[in-house]
Amino acid sequence: MAYFNHEIKIYMDGQKIIKTLRHKDFIKVTHTGTCFEDGAAIYAKEIRENIFLLFIILKDIDIENIQALIAHFDCFNSIGLKEPEQIMFYLSIRDKNDLHYFEQYLKASHN
Image 1 (cartoon, rainbow, N blue to C red):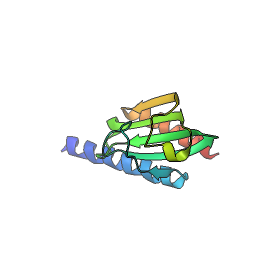
Image 2 (tube, rainbow, N blue to C red):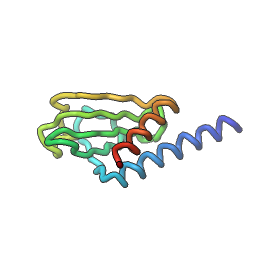
Image 3 (spheres, rainbow, N blue to C red):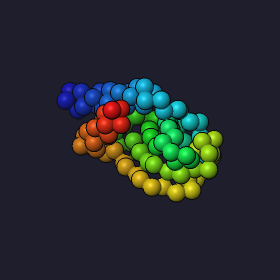
């Protein structure tokens, strides 16, 4: 039973992340290229000219499958079609500590 409750907690954390991203004006990007895995949900927000903060969440919304990156694309419409021109930051959220750092970042960026 404890394992089942742990799985529900992970799923709820994933749902919380998606709601937070939508609240922070991230736009869900449809991807048709090969740079992201099939079934991944991509949320992007331009933070500087042609520099984007992206969150990639795999279909099963498991904590082990959330990635954050800051990348340079030639335009917003190339996200999901082309590889980024440059990746400046990458974070793979694999455990509760990573999720905690992610939540702290979102709170700090809100202020």
